[in-house]
Amino acid sequence: MDSVVRRLLRTKPAEQIVAEGGHGEGGELRRTMTLWQLTLFSVGATLGTGIFVILGQAVPKAGPAVVVSFTLAAVTALFSALSYAELAGTIPVSGSSYSYAYATLGELVAWVCGWCLMLEYAVSVAAVAVGWGEYLNHFLRDLFGRQLPDAITHSPGDQGGVVNVTAVLIVLLATWLLLRGASESATANAVFVLIKVAVLAFFCVVAFTAFESGNLTPFAPLGVAGITAAASQVFFSYIGFDAASTAGEEARNPRRDLPLAILLSLVVVTVVYVLVALTAVGAMPWQQFDPETTEAGLALIADRATGSTWAGLIISFGAVVAIASVVLTVLYGQTRILFAMSRDGLLPRIFERVDPRRQVPVANTVIVAAFVSLLAGFIPLGQLAEATSIGTLFAFAIVNVGVLVLRYTQPDLPRGFRTPFFPLTPVLGVILCVVVMLGLAGVTWLAFAIWMAVGLLAYFLYGYRHSRLSRSVR
Image 1 (spheres, rainbow, N blue to C red):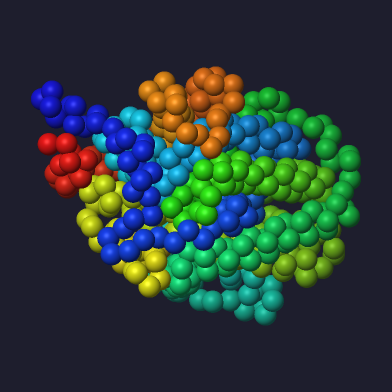
Image 2: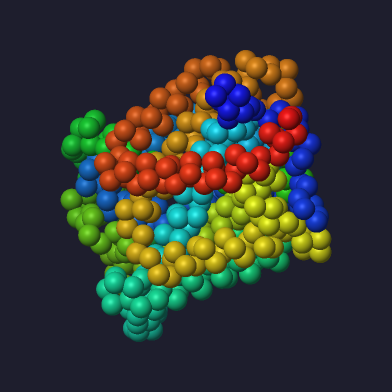
């Protein structure tokens, strides 16, 4: 029994993890991504549907003080972002928090973390893809007065859906870009991100023309409780800043650029969120925000401000682009995490095979795309999609603990960035993640528990037997 426990808690040396970076079966990943591209990758994964739909749900809870809620949520995310930045600059590989956990907390915790990341990435990208058809229909309705039939824009059993063809199409489009190469995917994402940032900047300008200071009073009608309740809700709009860490083996200068990309993306997203929230509540009284019409929230405000529908049409187009960007970046992150887990022997070797010509894990990408397409096309995700939040928060907490452990076990390890105010920062990061997790619904915890049970079964049936680290030290 002692030998089994020691094996489960065995860590993989950080130096070994870094040395293996970029290497896969049959080829190597290509280092092409710049700081600019890495930053936009994280912005692309973070700045998505959240800001287009979250205001309608958060404003009724906090009133105009929703601006403070976004800021508070950003501060909460910042603690984990600082820990991510340190570990990304220390262990710059594709595995993200999975690899960080392997170097600090052992194989079993690493597997659990990787399993959580599968929940965060694969299920969330399917959920986002499901919503793409709805935004596309909104755009088509505003532009042409017509829309696609429910049979191909909804999943079976959901509003007359048969197969959500639109969800499958956006996944296939993202897959096509990923198969062309990391650099090409990063370039496409950069275009997507610049478009959606421009659309949100356009919204701020339009909303500001209807800005009335009287709409900001009373500023916090529901008090501190309302601000914190809204902050817990909008926190999930910040999930995704860790996307740059999954590109560690395709970055040109990972030790320097990964920490900067993570922190810069969080700053960019926070500024955009706060400006959009401020101009929105200034342009429309907070009492008129309706949680039931969240999909068209920003478009409605823009239409009211201009007295026509052309502004709302542009906002709807921005939402369509935003979702496409999220699908692309999150799908990329999922494939790279599976690549790292396969290289360690915890998943079948097919996930680490690299096409020597394209220098991307082709089979891995196709398998992930097929799985996500099935989820998006045939399953109304419902509460399962909400469970992605708890998986993400669990991974964040592990990263914060990993910083604490690695600082004490390997203080002299080269670090491209050091978390300030250590150990206070990672400790607060863990506490805040736990607090937000405890505020989630019971059904979310149940879904998470079931997912973890399935994950542990998969580990002991396959990963435990095939772990390359365990075989190498026998």
